[in-house]
Amino acid sequence: MPVIWPSNLKDLDLECDSKPLQRSLGLSWDVNTDNFLFQLSSENKPITRRGILSTINSLYDPLGFLAPVIIQGKLLLRKIVSETVDWDQPLSDETAAEWKSWRDTLIAIETLRIPRTYVPYLSKTATKELHVFSDASEKAIAAVAYLRTTDSSGEPNIGFILGKAKVAPTSGHTIPRLELSAAVLAVEITQTIVDNLDLHIDTVKFYTDSKVVLGYISNETRRFFIYVANRVEKLRKFSSPKSMELCTN
Image (cartoon, rainbow, N blue to C red; front, top):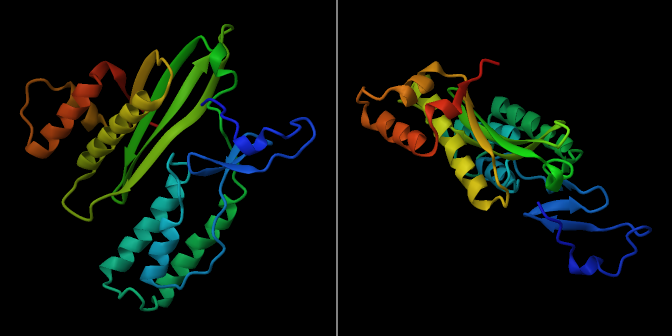
């Protein structure tokens, strides 16, 4: 990711002056440390369906740094919706306690510091590999991509690029189908990365812990139901059996 210095920094003495926080990709950027950080609203929202939705929507995270945290809030919101709670009706004591516990985890987010650069000295790398992992449960599906580079001496470096998580449908989907949807999500974020990242990627590898998904993409003879067939077609269009590996841990 190239550095574009904001115009209001041009008159600073970069050796002596403290650089102010800037905005990059919608995130706060600490120019002094070259890290992304999160500044959350301190406003106490009411413990209602409307207040919870407002809190979740206030977490702007386009690159998926906070996906594991935000998805927990979305799952709690879905639980509230399933209980047919009105928008401004106070939550039950049990649900309110769950919400307060999740909200308390947001405090720790403000101490999070994420390097802006994927890996040190990106211009000096000899190889660039994209490694994309997917997984699913009854509650959610997710995918995350990392860039692995090596320099001329073979020293490796690994950096987070993009992550995404989605709430799983409430019914009608087996774990194998959800794993398949997660693999499709991995392909989708890979497309986004390849289309927008100004880098030549030497190798792209996909990882899943589902043997069923590997079976789907490798099977050239069986005719699948429409749901599976459409997703298998998308996987085959942007990946291949050779590019997808079983990840057991």
